[in-house]
Image (cartoon, rainbow, N blue to C red):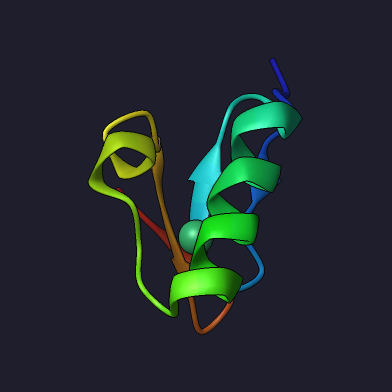
Length: 53
Ligand SMILES: [Zn+2]
């Protein structure tokens, strides 16, 4: 089953919901750092177009 995932373009963290992905992206842009609160919700990280769990 294919699940749609949403990525923070700034840090590459992948989320199950668009809302949190956008929040992470906003935070990353503003503070140039990741918010651990959001990263906890992340299902993985996208780096070099490869999904690492
Ligand atoms: Zn982020």
